[in-house]
Image (cartoon, rainbow, N blue to C red; front, side, top):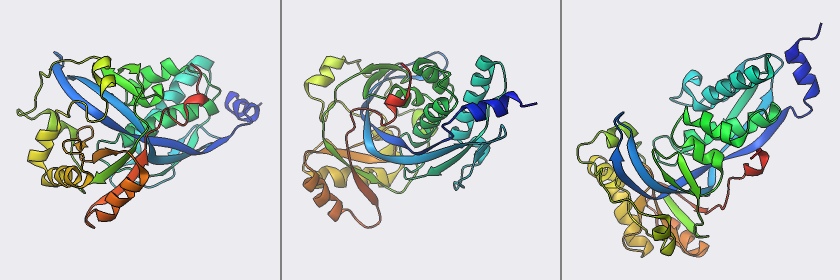
Length: 305
């Protein structure tokens, strides 16, 4: 007798999705406005999607195993957010359907550094939830996927939300916001910055005055600051060096800043040829690249509202 899982496989004509984008994000500013009783910090930020990131492929299996077929240095499969996301979704879909759900093979082309503040792991998890939800028959809505993503990390709901956003709370309260169509130069200083080290610092500013979306919208380029940056610069010299170099070289004094809790540093650049000129001058001991602002996540249209 055909099992429920085998039936699902037979009925689902779409067995794989290849080249699924997991774009990076930049925090155009990041203010720490307080701290909850449970220790989580209250933030205000604008998340900006950019056209540079990881790429994932998914293929349904005949059994129920979730298998990461790509080896990632320093990340065991069991600890990988993509695997955890897939298993979490698989369990939810099985509960909703009342029966077992096929497994999946996941491969990852990794471009984003760990500990870079670009949201790489969170973006991979979000793309996994969006892609596998589609392969498994769109069992969950976007809102349900966002709630599931929050169990994996504070940035995951943003990537599923799929639009540039003004974020509050711990980063999960999102309002779509228009951002400039511009280029960015991003420098990887070559040092990972552990997020807990920054947030646990006694030197971290935790009482920045809240702002409104209108404040950002009036002058988005160079708005605000990153409250985590001064702590990261004091603890990790390469971050401070990259900020100073990009600030000086770009000609946009004061606009170069760190994204997230670091370590990557970026600056908005009006024209691609200007970005190319800056990249040509980057010291060889850093990795650097250019990216253009995205208006929405490449996989946004794959989801149910």
